[in-house]
Length: 208
Ligand SMILES: [Zn+2]
Image (spheres, rainbow, N blue to C red):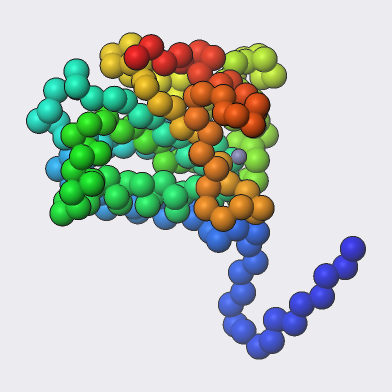
């Protein structure tokens, strides 16, 4: 197949399957977050010295006993940049200081968000894989990569810690596709389509 395109006389040209949301974009956004109800953590550092961030958002003045816990993982697949825009929208909503609905979300829930699950893959422009050519989504139960993937191992450790501390009520694994607008949120309950989306909680079962 041959595709012809006339680029005209532009000096700078970028071609991208998805609108870019880079490692630096995520890092700059993470660094810019400073609202009172946010706790930030560099959860893990990759073999290529790239950071995996964890963001916790809640109203800390209200006991965790009365809250549900939601855990969101974004960008296991580097090319699915639409999910970074969706996740940024979620975070922006949750930290809105003047919005009544945002305040309810902070009072009723503890939100944990990993905005960039595959920092090496994103930094080095991978599509589906990490720096070592592993698909993180196939790493959760060690059935394909028997020794695991370091990114997934780090996430599972954190998820299990939080699950034993509070019990995770809802786990969301966000993906994107060039066939849909926005992102695809896969959750820890099978849906009526019959698609089984429970694989990522085989190790981290919700208990609450
Ligand atoms: Zn994906």
